[in-house]
Length: 506
Image (tube, rainbow, N blue to C red; front, side, top):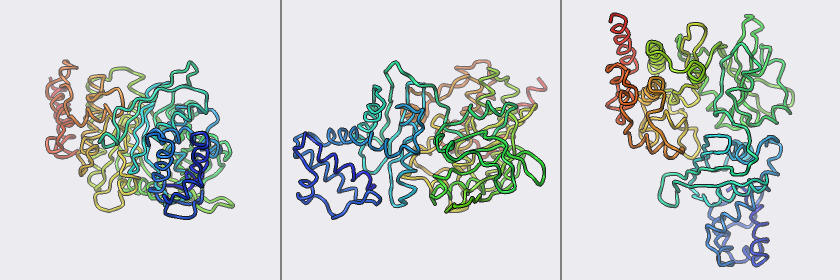
């Protein structure tokens, strides 16, 4: 447990139950194992539980109630300490949505020995947020209290449901947090980093990106140059860093520059993941995979560490998700062409021993007038030939990725191979053809449970106009057992090409 928590635990002990406990009293009871608790260090997890248990015993209240009460007490103090990295425009759900990033900046980065809980969030609407909590400490009542404390800090009211809980034997806790005050806040975009460039740079600078650490960006204005590249505009912002439109001063061409955020650059785990993404993507040379031109580090006067950056092909087009939202139902012929090109890009990656692991519409760019597929964002890529995989740099063995497109073997923590990407491709094709997802749920937990059950409705039952051979392929791609899916992405390419030929001759 990070020492900062212990600092406020002392204050809580002195304030609990109107003074019926005290920090000195807890310390003198002998429940702690160390003599000094430094706010900048790490302290044994067992001491946290022992101290809170002692307070519970002294006050005669159950431990879960004390944990939640401590969370309510702790939250406003941490919001105050985190002030420099909290966007002043955020409200309750916004702050909860970005809590993992804030914890990372406050504890994991300056104190590599700290292991904070992993929090995955998905914004369902302006007033509803779904959250998955995973931690060996199993202090979910503390998390509930902190969410209530954040709401109290902003003067708002929230309702919290917990469909699954570690304390009830579930593999992780899931929460549905709903803001029920009339003062709602605007919608937030998915946590994705876009490198596509549309004709309107101003539009792209705000659409399809997050505002995480936006106030830090204002304190560190857009650089004029990065390496030998002249920065023209900010075109994306995400959890790992920012994406700039830039011009290559030597070749006089526009490029996209993904630059790691300063709060992440000093963290060895985050740096490894950033460079792993760039190396993995650069290893693939294919027309349906975004091209990596260069990987480097940007240094400025006074920097203790350089900022890693990736120079990428600048793409002009929409994500598949944006394209579908704009044009509506995509014609069958175009769906087949898109699916074949995705499979061709995946085949090239798989031949290099690389698994993307996050195939979804936001990571598929349709470039130019011909809407040629480009696969982007290999941030979760798994390298089958080395030990340096995304799994090895993920904290607490959390489930990462986008739930709706996640293969069941990833949820169950089983071995993952190329067929996990084929599952994601199948979900994308099902969604395009049926105008709905094959696996649904009202929360992140419900969505994961639906995938784990593996009983999607037949594609032809929801889209009868889809040809039988197309439906059969899609249902095979999303088969629950990887052994029942196509043998390879190349086999999928051949199957789609044969269907396209049949339709052209019919």
